[in-house]
Length: 315
Image (cartoon, rainbow, N blue to C red; front, side, top):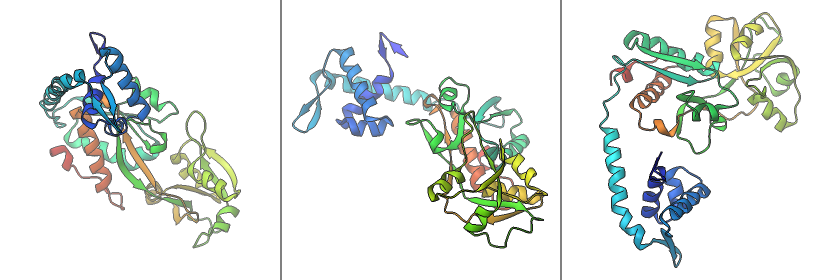
């Protein structure tokens, strides 16, 4: 947004630059790269036709003009912040709102499904519109197609706000009638068996376990590739196939399908699912409530798969 040809976002950058007197420290506070912060300073210099910050020895100092701007700029931002915080609190029991979330079938199964079921009891006018993650998540978030992305950090947009939703590990899954699977799966057993794997997204990206197998220089036999984990679980039943999937999801499927869940015999780092939202929603009471509610659901859902609690609805 511009006011008299000034990008108002630059006022936030100006305030932090004048306080920190360092481009690198200001960049950290603004959650921007150092080059982006330097660019903001350059635009401020062009607009005010003033250096704004100059080097004095080894530190930066505000120019006389910048010193006169410090108090009014801070006053403007404080007033805006006060106006934001004065907005009515979000009450999910009475609110009518649709939340658009991009998430994988895995996240939908192990986290969102519980949240939706419990919301139907106490917040019937809250609607979840869940869509699959894609290779263009940055574009979808920027243009407002989704309110929230749930994905591993590597697929998120750099320098955009995010927080951890939950963590998970990986397990191997096989049909209970598959006698070729030993009680303890070794790395050699793992490579000898026939696998079904998942490739997701428009670019059909390979899954996590293949990347680590490539590190070991190991080759496995893949009999089938599926588009999602839910289809993998049903395909395995009655076959000699095995798969590698998220432990929470594996345990969920094993409760109502004849499946065995075994420790994966390769070292895989834990999976961290993150929530990301557009900066314009940073102070949106509804989005803030949604994030807090999903965090509560993810943390309170125990290993037996019981539904999450509803503490956040009534807080």
